[in-house]
Length: 374
Image (tube, rainbow, N blue to C red; front, side):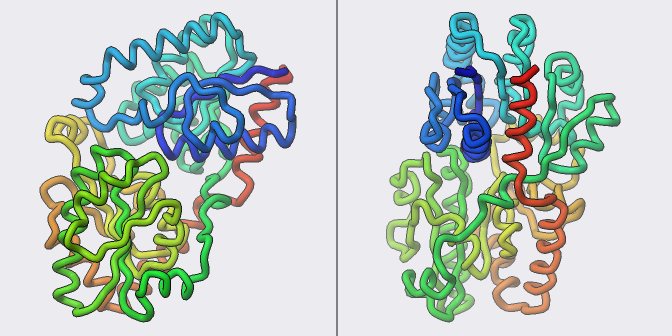
């Protein structure tokens, strides 16, 4: 039995990690996985040391608050490596933990494959040296990331984006909209994020924006997506007195079949972009985290869909600009201006082409198995 340590600390990492595990097992069933992941990775056979819901911190203040837990997790993972001796470690994004764990793996002579690059091209470029010293194979999802690493003397494998295979609605447009009572009226989707801290900051102005937009349009239907690892009660505490429907397990249907979306910055912006739905990207964090980020980040856009596009193809609202009125105004533009709507859909189609071809998880799995054969 080949022993593989795998670590994902966020919901998106759990999604991509589970697809990678599935492909690895298809190509070689004789593999055992242990590490950190979520429900999707556990369903693929992961024996979890920690669950992603316990690791998913957002912002500098939250990280500082959880330092004792993070240290204990690091110790537990080091103990696992020493007792279990995996033949390969796969680290998925999550740089705050993984880039601190990689040197330990290197000292123990465990080969390291880093799958899904941290956003070093946006900030912390100095961390490229950690990749160069402690990572044996860097596997990236975007072509521009391969070019970025080459500038720093690091060869990276570009496999394309696994979301191209994963992002599929489960229902037809008409049946989904009819189930919500939308019919031909505007359907607005709200995607407030997968972390409780994100929801608490982003969802209240999203909800209030629906009230304002309804007053402008006269009639609309609104639906909010609940992330798999999120307690639905966190959303429902903000929707009292509204007719906003909360759905779990229907995120891609919401993205695909809504007329416009309000989306918390993150992987969800790329998923919605793949499905071609115009959106407003919102981002708000603690003042300390925001000010620190503004000093370190040297990119013009924060939404992943805009970063991949290399231009602002959908509007973004940051910090104090995240207000109900601003969100409602941008959503109204999509609902009332057909030329703008079609222009954005056309731009999103071009961004999708930049993500490469389908089969990314299988290509990454073959790289992992090649390392195991060495």
